[in-house]
Length: 193
Image 1: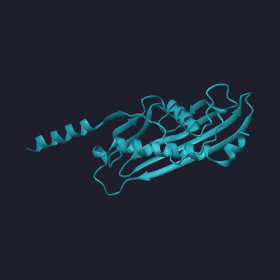
Image 2: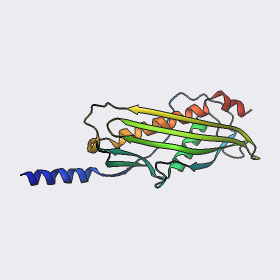
Image 3: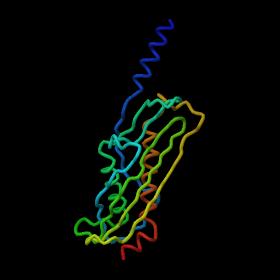
Image 4: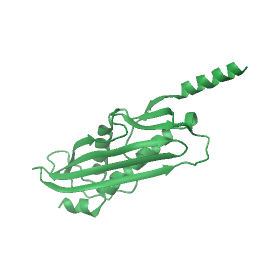
């Protein structure tokens, strides 16, 4: 009976391990103010993350109480493409995205983008952006970090029972928060004049 129980637990544990790819789309955390000046294009997006540098698709991991990875969250495309599209969507929501012949180019460096769960879900996103003119003159450099914690310390939805969808939710919310903070700063709007 013990062997059957142990075998059942092993099978359950192995079935729970794995990687899930989910779409990672921008959703504004605040109502974007429409600027109606389509003058910015998204340029180069560079991935300089420490965590995740070995896998360009990796977003986060759900771990058990001992720190052993149980489930992984990945984007369907490299994180650089996820961030490029998110910034483009955010600029479009504000009326700033230039479809052609932009006056400014926004280059983004991903310094951190990860979501993890031991008992509670945590996500950290940090971007450094450089706004240049079309002739490559630097107009603005800024850096923004967003951090969120979600869930309860006392929960049954951890380890193999942790939800990859919930981890994705906090990762997206944190990414969107960092982007919104950058684009909604008065200094960003002032640099476009």
